[in-house]
Structures are given as C-alpha cells and as structure tokens.
Image (cartoon, rainbow, N blue to C red; front, side, top):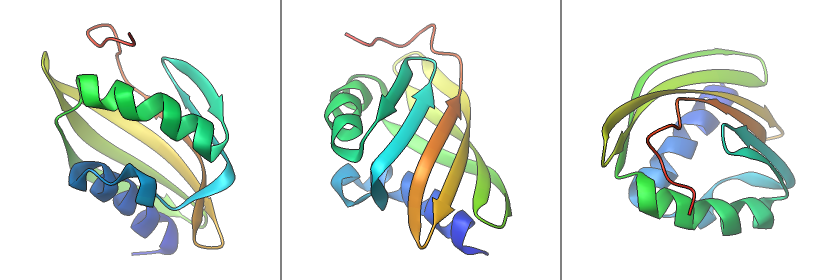
Amino acid sequence: MNQSEKLARTWIDCWNRGVPDELPLIDDFQHESPFGKVRGRDNYLTWVKPLAAKNVTELRVIRTVSSGDACAIWFEMRTAQGWVPVCDWVTTKDGMITSIHSFYDASGLTQE
C-alpha cells in the first residue's frame, strides 16, 4: 500500500471514527463535490462537518486504485435514504492530502 492509498483510507477512517479534525489536510486543501467547491482546510471543515452529520452514518471502502501521489477510493456512504456509491480522487504530497474530488449522486441528500 503506497502513501496516497494510506491517506485515502485515513480519510475514511477519520470520518468513521467521528474525528474529522484529525484529517491530514494541508492548510490550502481543496474539495470539489456535487455540492460545489471549497478551498482551505478550515473552510472545508466548517462547511462539511454539519453536512456530514445530517447525511452520513457510515462509510464502507470497496476498493482503491493508487499510483504515485494519487488514489481513487471507491466506497459506499450510508445515509438515511440508504447506501450511496462514491468515488473520491485523492491527491497527496509529503504525507498530507492536498485535494479531493468527490463523485456521487447527491439528489437524496440535504445541504441545509
């Protein structure tokens, strides 16, 4: 398992343990999802923690594919509406996550 895969799995593990503040994100972290783009570690955590608390109860890893400083992690996100398949493209550098681009159907989820 290379460093990018370890960090992608850490991403999932931190959410499942309920400790998103322990995510190894650079200060200028970037996240893109069906809900939009967020730049900055603090901005991201301020935005995503309440969103995740309303929508996500568990994450379950299916498979990872990694090369160099990038990893695609396919997982399922348990929501009140059931399981939603997700694929995140995680980029890393020097042992930290620099960006994540999340792909999933957000039609049954709430942003409010």
